[in-house]
Each structure stands twice: as C-alpha cells, then as structure tokens.
Length: 306
Length: 306
Image (cartoon, rainbow over all chains, first blue to last red; front, side, top):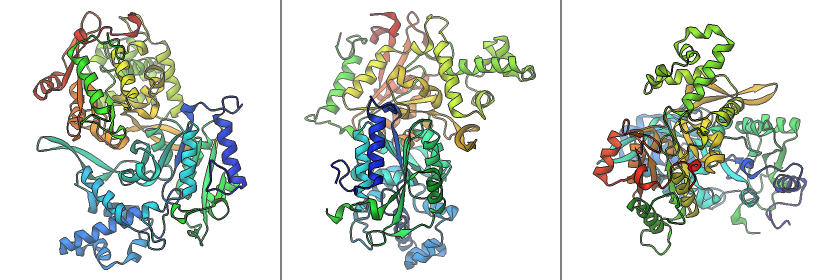
C-alpha cells in the first residue's frame, strides 16, 4: 500500500500514476512541467461517482417531475410527467441518449426558476437521495481511489477540474463537500441564464436554452479551453464522450497521462462496456492507461471501510 | 502610506477597502465571510489597464487587418481593411459601440485560425505594441494601485477574477505576466471554438460565432455564474457595462464592496465620463465607492516610479 494512494493496489497502473506525477512535478526532471501548465481534468459520471442504475441528475429531475405532477394533475398529459408519477423507470432508460428529450425534461423541471432556488432543490435532493443497491447516500457513491488521486495531484501543484457531461450547477452544489473542489473548478453542461430584476434586486433566472456546446465529446475540449485556457496533461474519463478530452491532452505538446476507468467489477460496483467501446479500443491503440476497477482499486467506495 | 496598498493615498477610499477586507476576512468579525465565498471580480479595460486612445484589442485587430491587406490587395475592397491600411483611426473610432461591426472585424482577422496560433499573434503584438502617449508598452499601462489591490485581496483569501467585456483569449495571453492571474481566472467575451483534427491531432479552431452572452452589461453576472458559480463580494468596474456586475455583488446577500473607478485625472491619465454616466449616478444613489484616480491614486502606472 502506497501512503499517497492508499486505496489503490500496487499495480502497474498505480506505478504509472506515481511515475508520471513525479516526472512532471520534480524541477530536476527532464520532463518537468511548470505548475501553471499542470492541469488535470476529470469526467464525473462513471469516473468520479457511480452512474448506475441511472445518472443521479436524471433521478433528481424525475423526483421533481413527480412532485410537479402531484401539484398539478394536468401535467400528467405529458409522457415524462406521467412516467415519473407512475415510477416507470423503463421510460427514462429509453431516453438514455435522446438529448433533446432529456433537455426538455431539464427545462420542464427547472426553467424560469431563480438559480439560487435551483441550487437549494439540488442540495436538498442530494442530502436525502440514497443509492438503491448500496444503501448509502448517492453523494457518497464516489470512487475513493479517484478522490485520492485528485488530492494527490493537488498536493503536487496540479490544478484539478471536473469536466462533466452533466449539469454544471447541479454538481457544484456538492463539489466542495464531496471532492473539496471549489465551484469554479467544475465545468459541465448547463442551461442558460438571464439577468433579471425582482423587487429591484438582480437575480439570475434559468432559461429554456443550452449553453453551447454540451460538455460531452468534442464539446469537452471546447469547454476546457473556454474555462481553463489550456489543455490538460492529466485527463480521466470512462466513456466515448471523453475521447476528445483525452485527445486534447495527447495534443498538448507536453508529457501527458490519459486514464480510462474500466467498469469491470460487477461484485463491488458494475461491469459494463456499453458506451465505452471506442474509448477502450483507442486506449489500446494509443497506449492510454486503462484503470481496472477490479484490479487497480483496493477499495471502491468510502463507506466500504478499509 | 499604507504598507499593503503603497500606491494608494491615505483617503477614505483606501480606508473603506482596508476596513471591508478586514471585516470579511477576520474570523472573529461579526461580518466574517468564509474564504469559499470571498470572490472578487474586476473589469479590465479602463479598470485595470488604460483603454485610451482605443481598446488595445482593437489596435491588435487593426494591425492584423493591415498585414492581411498587405498580403492580399483584394481585401482593400472591405472598408475596415481599407481604413486599417490607410491608418484611418477615425473610421474605427466611429465603430466604438457598433458591436456587430466590431465582431465582423474580429472574425475577419482571426476566424478559422487554430487557437494556439491566435495566442502567438496576440502575445507577439503585446510584446511590441507601445502606447502613443506614455511611451511604454501597452501591457505596462496597468493601474498599479489596482494591481496592488488584487494582490492584497488574494493575500486575504480572496479568489480574484477578471471579467472583461473584451476578448478572453486575448487577455489570457498576458494575465499571468502582468497580473499574476492564471488564465482560468480570466472571464471575458469570446468567439466560439470547433474541435477539429489536423494530421490526426485534435486542434481547436476559432470560428465565426460568439460565445453567448457577450461579457458586458447583463452578460457579466451570467458569465460570472457560469465560470465561478457565485456572486462577487468585491466588484470593480469603470463604466455602464459594469453596472449589472455591481448589482450582482449587491444582491449577494453578503457584505460587499463595489468600486467604480472614475477617470478624472487628465494629467496622469485621461479624464472622461462618457460611457460611465449611469454608473456614476447609481454609485451616488446606492453608496457604491467611487475611486478617484486623481485623489486616491498615489501613482497611476508602474513605470512612473514612486
């Protein structure tokens, strides 16, 4: 067990991480990278916390659809409200990659609302929502080895960011609590805001519209450039939507470490390659480091104990 | 002279700054604000560096228009290229608030270009461009008291950001050098990017399009929310385009300090109220702190000596 990454097994993957971080942060190293360029970007769903049985943010939206339908039965005419009220999770599973339909749900549940009210709702949801299988709060279903890795990188002068395909505002309500990451270090997809005045005070309202581009696939390097201004030299993801972010690190012209988390541990978490097929193939072709949850993680969740 | 803000005169303005920062950063203070919420946002043109006789970024674009016209005479058919080639600054002064026309110039000069090439051009320009009146590099025409203020805030646990109406990528090429502000702490307006592949490598190309909203007026709080995720409690500006940012600090629900830099020093810099009329009036009505360059600044530019 390595003191700095205690939840990782002593495998070649752990060694690759330790060697890389040493090589870029030691001033006497021939591959030293100045701290200003030491940027690390982490996908969130499936890379830092569990994305099964569904994206946590989708469960948040479904809870809200249900509450809204209870308050106004007319809403049941819309299929998403009806499915939420009936607990029909199959309906939402069918929307998995139907971005316009998912956006419509996001708009229906929170558009027009002041941003601070949305934050309160998200925070309340995450305070009580529990994972159906692990009998733990969703927000504790984070991968302990990855949390340690972020801490380890920060301790070596890295600037660590989340680059989530999911909602930026949603994640920011808990990023400081669960990852010690300030809100400004969380990048993601988001709906647009409008500056309005209520009772003479400026307030930001959430609108029916999307901040372009969605922070997924080719949108990830674009949003990294807009928020950070330089490519990462450590990039971690778990799915096809992370490929362009890993390519951005590869094209940085600097030493880089790309990590692809492979969900191969049905016993402690889940085992699935769906949505990661191209990323796994590219990792093999280009020598990106595949992290096996089964082999490389000594523990998965913080609530497992050691 | 106060050790922490040596380029400020001992005026009520300086006292207001010192008192405020003490009151929010001292844990035993009744108005203590936790560090995570200590966000400070500074406009750039006219607040941190000189915006006269023209926005520096506009001069950068004009130089590029001229170079492009020299390489391709057909471009002279377009009025902006013709004016740049002829050194007709009056033409550009006439566009001052014609955002679509200015955007067209930005697109014409740099769209289609890889982002890294743009950065190199901007960096080269700022390395040689000199202010016509002060006989100093433009990038040294920064307000020394404001640079000190940013440093003073950081030393007291503030997270300091630039929120420029001008181009984000342009400012980022020098923010680390002149303000010690990392690129990720610079927010501004920007054109959009496209992730493309050249020779198998991922590259970001600058497009003919704008990241919405422009970081001016009501767009400032929106971009602050998108990049930072919370309102500032110190906000500094100099023009009408900064009003909504100051209102955002005022509506934060926390102690706040709004600063409006007043250009009233024709001797050492420039004296003008144009474009700041509403901001000056609101400052009076709401008790925001007006900073007088003439009275509150012991020195203006770093090259003046002490």
